[in-house]
Image 1 (cartoon, one colour):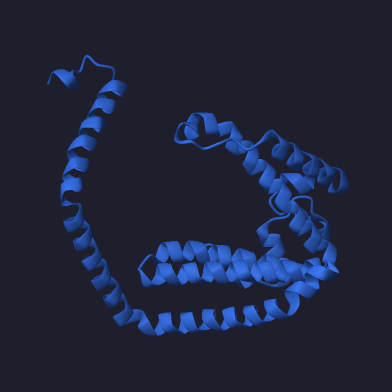
Image 2 (cartoon, rainbow, N blue to C red; image 1 turned 90 degrees about the horizontal axis):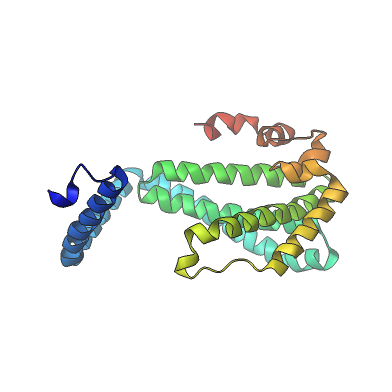
Length: 240
């Protein structure tokens, strides 16, 4: 009992206990890894087959819809992306990009559904709804809104870069991760400052600040965008 003595500080007792737990269980797992993984894979195959036996028709219908949408996107992208980029058509470029992201998420939803992860699939479906709302909003508004949407990405990139550099020394520096160069941060900060000067502070401070002017609201929300494009009927399913 010496190494687990109650006289030790609680934190140290926990550290020793976890170290012993890792030692015993990781050694045990390492010696039986192939057998354990084989059993797990056999169970997974059987589970997915039972799931398909029950829900195969619905899964097939979903997959057909996604594949049809993918084919339509591919044809549209092949026909319009390069002309849109040459013409500086930000709205078309935005819609092609949002459609591609929606399709990628739709395929993630399918992968989760066929493996039985319904809650994960629903979380990704929420993302798909958000992307669809943004796409309809951009479609229904002047090209300047698409321009603001694309420019707003700089705000998020700067925020993530600053947070990454701030936490790196305490988290992942010892694993070989490198900080983002100061030159890159300065470039993002300068672009962010120009956006603030051009569009105001609200553009920077709220997730949907790019839509503020079009909606006439200082701090627009996803619900505001839904109401604007007539998609509030999806809100109950989104909020499930």
